[in-house]
Amino acid sequence: MANLTEHPPLTRPSVQAAHELIKTSIHRTPVLTSNTLSDLASTAQSHDALVGTPFEGQRPARPRMKFFFKCENHQRIGAFKIRGAFHALSRLRKDELLRGVVTHSSGNHAQALALAARTFGVPAHIVMPKISTPSKIAATQGYGAKVIFSGSTSQEREAVVEEVMKKTGAILIPPYDHPNIILGQGTMALELEEQVKELVREDESLSAHSQGKANIANVDMNGDGPTAVHGLLKQGAGHLDAVITPCGGGGMLSGVATALSGTGTTVFGAEPSFEGADDARRGLAANERITTVKTLTIADGLRTPVGEITWKVISDKSKVRGVYAVSEEQILSAMKLVLERMKIVVEPSAVVGLAVCLYDEGFRHLVEEEGGEEGWDIGIVLSGGNTTVEAITKMFAVEQKKGERAEGKLGADGERIAENVAG
Image (tube, rainbow, N blue to C red; front, side, top):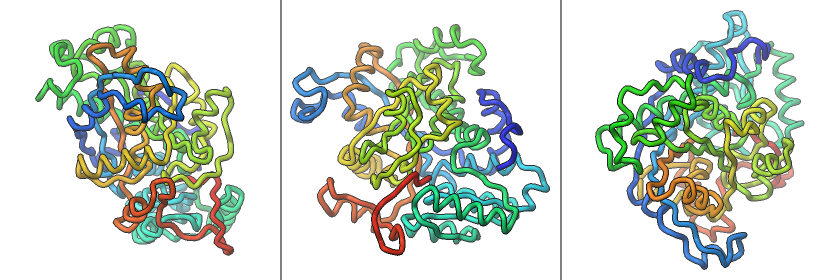
């Protein structure tokens, strides 16, 4: 991409400025609630559900949670990635735009950049690994981008990107690891804050803190005074106690954490655990970023390690409280609940945050301990809905342990491996 020094700082005001730049190009996606899912999360898991986990034999947690779902599956191109793509292009100079843009992505960022480039009237070259879901390949091509296929390893993809850049002079727009991408993704958190306050003003029973509704009137949410703001809003309905987002490369998580810094809302990340996909969680435990991920988790948008820049935000305890990981079975279970109870279509990557709230006893005990009798209001980002009926059928038509996405082959020999695949 353009010079890394040519970007606004990673601060809440910068996210607000990014929102002003892109708000006419994106959807203000809806925030939905679900009494059914909130009640389910507020019910203790059975002792049998904890067998084989670190919490086996212990008392199941009994947290109280009220959920507010930020539905980025209703965003343009079906996922949150459009926010970062539009912001990144809006920050390029005219001479840079004329050179065109290039990226590597398994799907959602590919579609987002293709649409943003078409809107700006510039060519887009998208390097996609052959593992990419056919529907995402077709959508990317449908937005007018030139798709170039590569192998699935980071070395293969980066080599193709370098070749495209040499031939065309195109500017690299990374999937997640750039400040302008991070700031763009963070804009969803600003909307989420406003929308939750609007919803609770209309119906205070939606909040775990309904008795404190009067405390939120005319509160300044600019984040300049974290101690005073936190002390007031923590007691009032309409203020989110926590937000949890999926984490792959970390652009969304670090963007949301930047946007909510100083507001009193605690931010968490969620990952799949399958085949080491939980690199952020493991990296935080080891106090060192993990640079390689090889996984075929069904959460295909999260098959990539956290980036260098996003790691700096995610590893900052003042911005991200922690990252939790869930199994393939838990992801499928959460996805099934969203499909059947909320009647909305989501992809597996979108529901890892909900799965943490429903099934991770470590997180649930934390909410019970810190939320007390009232509990927590929790914003859950449903990051995208780019899937198909065929893919959903394939996931749920077999045993959950063998559920998978409908995907292309990984290479000429059809070997099913994956490494650092950016969503």
